[in-house]
Image 1: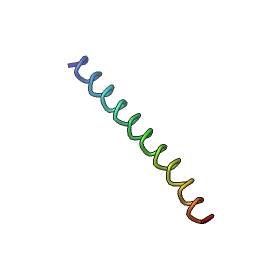
Image 2 (image 1 turned 90 degrees about the vertical axis):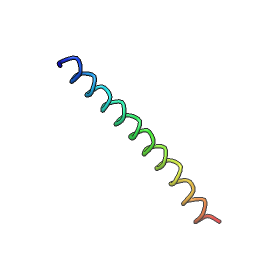
Image 3 (image 1 turned 60 degrees about the horizontal axis):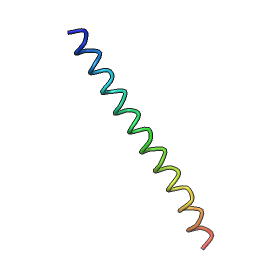
Length: 40
């Protein structure tokens, strides 16, 4: 049970890491796009 619980936590941490990366990438990608759009 402990191992299973630990595994679940690790999976959640991995998912959170991936989501954080996606969100960061989206913000980085959106910001320059908005600036470029305003520039044009």
